[in-house]
Image (cartoon, rainbow, N blue to C red; front, side, top):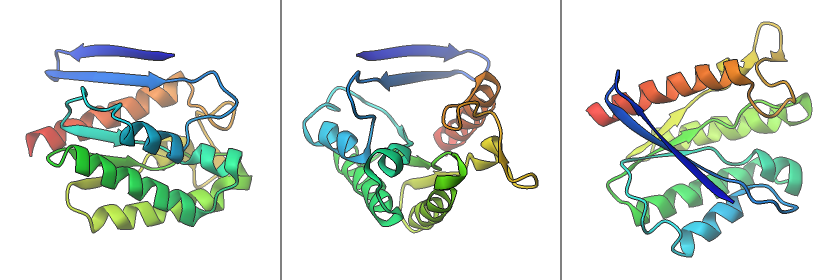
Length: 171
């Protein structure tokens, strides 16, 4: 099912469109699924100035992909987005923290994605780790199932996303 919701924030004079794709299948969203959609004309009608990319956690768990594979998948998606919308800005959101079994992979991948963004025109990196992981306590926060944000975490994350998009649109 494709569900989209548009919200207008009059205080910030921003229209934000949030599109969620939830497929009721045995697999979750993964880099390859996004690439398929991008290369099979499922983006033609979408006109946007900023793409916000968060993909990779399901590649680790469902496919047991390496950090190299998830990094390469993210880069391929960014390159395809740039090909389709050359004037758009792409923001790579850090892969959110998860249970301890995945934290080393996530940290390594996020470090690589940040490095890639710093070296690539019209690509930014947004680190949301501090919202969902307490370094001092070395524990997750606002992720009750160790994967999905709770309401408080989602609000904090959303607020930071809006701030970053506002900054980008002012540039």
